[in-house]
Amino acid sequence: MSMKIFITAGEDSGDLHASLLVREIKKILPEAEFEGMGGKRMEKEGVKLVENIKGLSVVGFQEVLSKWRKLLQVYNKLAEKLRKGNYSLFIPVDYPGMNLRLCKVAKEKGIKVIYYISPQLWAWGERRVEWIRKFVDKMIVILPFEEDFYRKRGIEAIFVGHPLVERVVPEISEEEFRKKYLKTSLPLIGLLPGSREEEVKRHLPLFKKLITHFQGKFEFLVLRARNVEEDIYHGFRTVFEEPYSLMKYSYLLVVASGTATLEAGLLCTPMVIIYRSPLITYLVGRSLLKIPHVGLVNIVMGKRIVPELVGCRIKLEDLAREIQKIAKEEENKRIRRELSNLKRILGESGAVKRAAKVICENL
Image (cartoon, rainbow, N blue to C red; front, side, top):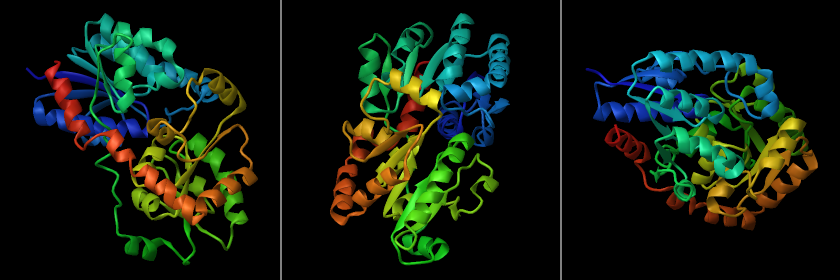
């Protein structure tokens, strides 16, 4: 009899991580069947999608409120599937707003729950630790300090390393990249406005001003996200198929806070981390935040390696000033040296294989 596994991811990065995990589990348990929520990558790996993640990714309280009706409909659909399906295991992947509630549904049904990629409770949501203690059997974490965080709170957790360590490699050579994209010999600044439509729309107006401000001093390219319509980037020169090449071959980057800061850090490229958010999101987030840094690369390194500009209003002059600082050769080299330690901290290659092994051993 085949084993049925329910797996849910709620955004593009989760879809990637979940798809890689499914691939590795199938190598150990080729008879396993997967159903759940995800995107194109998970579907390609054979996951039967109960719900597609397109349009579900949200950041901040204001965005959640604006989509609450749709999110509630999706939650009810997934919860009903968990209750009626004959599943041996539930694997939630990050996306805490919905996944933590689904953990409760699964446990009440008697389904084992192994959470892959921890919500950032250590930053803002420690009140949810009790929820995990009640409804999650094991946490598989990808940041080194998370294992200790959970174990100190009586929750079984294991650090497997970060899945990005082996994946963050330039897709083409620097010569090919420059020939394909660059028009001048000016230093390149890569602009990464985020992976969600709402955050891209918030950051692009600032980037437009930045390009005008530094015209003739730098060349600029914008990274286009997989799940964001191309028309939104109208008027910008974009890169789509070679994101890691853009990160690697840029002299410096301006990066929306998120996983991309770790990707850029693994490539040792200096960056300014930014995040513009609606006022209510900023005020509530600031009141909940329990750590001194916002950017993942600074959090993992345990100190501020690269500058951060976060708020409901980020001034062009403040961003320009930080860019000028890290554009100086000595400072640029210093940041690159510091970031060279990140790969060691995030663990050895093979994180997804280790995660799959842990899951299969705990069935």
